[in-house]
Amino acid sequence: MTRDPRYGIVDGEELYRKLAMGEPVLVLDVRTGSEHAARHIPGSLLIPLHELQSRVGEIPNSGTPVAVLSEKGIRGESACKLLAEHAFSPLLNLDGGLQSWTGPTANGDCNHSRHWFGIGPSNFLVQNFDLLPKGIALDLAMGDGRNAIYLATRGFDVDGVDVSQDAVNSARASSRQLGAPIRALVGNVEDGSYIIPEETYNVIMVFNFLHRPLLKEIKDGVKPGGAVIYETFTTEQPRFGPPTNPDYLLKPGELRDAFADWEILIYHETVDPEGPGARQRARAGIVARKPE
Image (tube, rainbow, N blue to C red; front, side):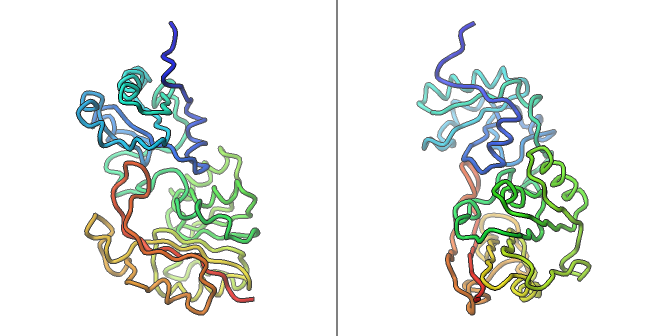
């Protein structure tokens, strides 16, 4: 049988690597809601195949590759043909469906799990990578290690710390699979069971985490001439969903003020989605260089 030339195929390992390396790919899950709840790729957009025709307008059609996911790949072919009729391109069908996927999966409501942010690195990290001095990096509250692994693939020597043993185990497994070794440690930065060593790191990064007493320790942990890259939610976020606890939300200008004595290379306070098809998020982000 001749394959439809309007779409290509991608295997599970290749798709996982694309996402983990920060390539812009929208994963469209066309299975049922119950299948998605049982097991899905973190960060994927769910539109069941039987609803796709009426909801095709929900899918960004801006040239970002769309990788279509079904259970075994069969429904994915039908979805690709439908999307091709609506001029989506490029299109990729996950060959073998979810059964061929080699990366992490989540279940239930991903909005309330550590997989909320998907598999790829933060857009803010990818966009500002060239501002970071090469060397040793620390990823605080790293979760599954998506940002730590991204730096490791680009020549950094990376430590990653998280309070969750499951998250650390997942980060270790992913780093091995992707050939990007990191030192992943279990540690609680809030209660002092993990202490950042002073003037040790060329880069310290923090994403989607806020513990205000830690800010001084973060600054002290960076070598002179090193940098901090930090992005997390602001007090505007409760309009769009969790987190809603003000203890974990930055006030307007707070992150910029915390690094007022450093050279601020990039700063933003924005409301936008993390990626194609994602919901709105209110965040502040900074890249700041420590004085020599």
